[in-house]
Image (cartoon, rainbow, N blue to C red; front, side):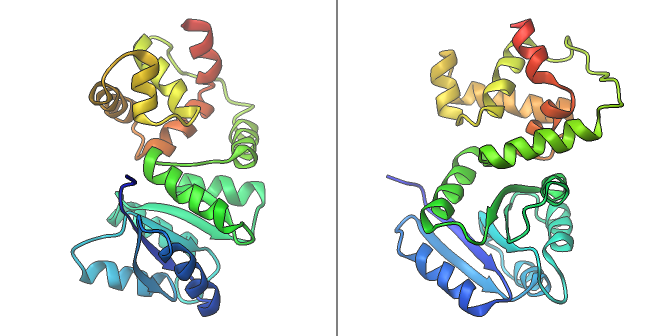
Length: 225
């Protein structure tokens, strides 16, 4: 049985927003928490209610308070809420910037309902979701910006087990999948994940992926294990 997911939809295009809400509401495990026209209305609603959504589908081009500025506020005030950036813009700098700000997934507005549902489920289960195209852009953007910088990452900073788990997180495996692969309990995996968040000073799982890419840990891990 799938776990219930509370989703908020923020988009100034009423027809599009209501259409997304209708599509998602047809799935029993998804509840539409609320809809908002723009970022300011979203923040106002969040400030007034106790129960917060698990995921926000956030349009990036909106009046009053756009998605970029809204994401910055959400990251500070509501860090537990996962942001899926919903947009027509698919430029490399824009994607890398949004992910640095706090978006844990990037969904094109011309995506199919199946792709949207898959993204929401993946984000809920894993904490983030980047398809192959977005992951490629992240690699190009992050490593391209750091080509002139020498990595100061100390391979002994993380334990062997932490490196194993970080690599599997970057490969977008769930906690239960990682536990099965390494023959350890899900609780142990979560413990290592929390240690990784503390050691890397990352805000969320998506931050761990960025940290791994920035420090070229993929190669370090593969060589060290």
